[in-house]
Length: 494
Image 1 (spheres, rainbow, N blue to C red):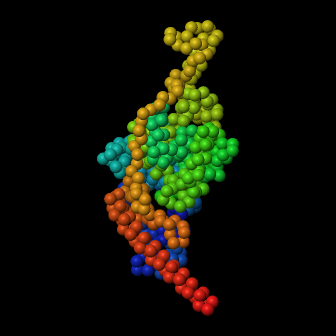
Image 2 (image 1 turned 90 degrees about the vertical axis):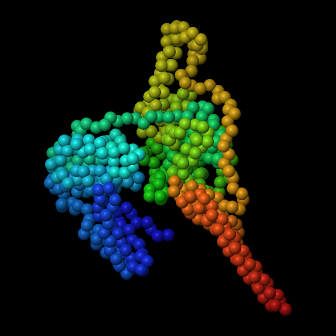
Image 3 (image 1 turned 180 degrees about the vertical axis):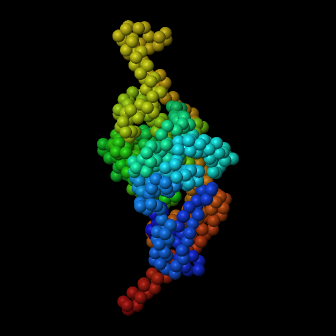
């Protein structure tokens, strides 16, 4: 397999005429589309050398070119490549690069670094809020969201703070700018009835173990997808969380969790351990939740997100994000008496203060209940009319024994054996897969792709006919070869 070139190295490909072409991004137009320059060569090595020379000629700002009156866009590029990019993950890099090339550089990139004022930045943020969106304006409007404006400000402020440290400017003009208010994203959780329907539907669609484990631990999506069977000790029930998976430009990448606290051990409930023990018997992979279409590969985070929404729809539940399953776990844990310190460790938060900040509405209810219990125990206050006896109270909203439901899951239509399977990769791509037992005694996978399910059905049917014909031909050749070898042996004996 060809080695993937790193971001910023340019691309090399062989053209139809046999020559090698190297391309390097030298800038972006007003709409954020890349502008490139190319080199041509007869061999790949020669092309790589020419591309490297082109990069050096067009390369970023050298350290001896850094000075107070340089363009803010040039300083931003230098700061990002030198001080920021090496320390952040690939997914974070994409966000930085997008903000710089789409919004910051086109708007205020030509202003000299030492001439950039707070008023320049304030007007820039106002323009972003009014008509800063480059794409999807019909769907989301002309202006950027408050969150994106704040993120652009954070990028500018950090870059300018480094310029202050380097002695290029005296003060940071980004400090003191008025920004759109920071709005906390509304937290949604599934109630008891929704949880029951959701898990019943997940079981019908083959995702019961995945979502049961997540609702029992509050793992992040990337942590859950990266689990391997070696991470679980079935004897003690201890699950080791020590890695995460994320997707960059369609490729899966693995890394350690972002903080030291995210590397943790979680003790699973015995019932969940038994479910996973039985589930393991059906899985022939080192991954706990392997991809059904790619060998030795876990499910991708995007596929799981799409499957979650489909199960929620079939179960008649409100649509929540995958991260809201984590909130659901934490809410139920607090309501059922788990202390905040233990919950913080299970969630992998930096400190219990982070947990308290996120779930303050739940802990406030718990504190009110505790105060009422203390009042009745010390002050001999009578319980409210119709209430329970002192010491028997429960936290508001703490659900009782879950009642049974008569919910019937939506059963997925199962394909007839021997007709392959079809998987939706994304909104515009379907994959058809046929995995017959091959002449070597092992299963081999054959794939076709199309933009619609109907088109992939036709292609898959044609593929199956071709594969069966090829298998028949190979079997006939094997049989003929075996008969030939048998004939030789019998003649030797004579």
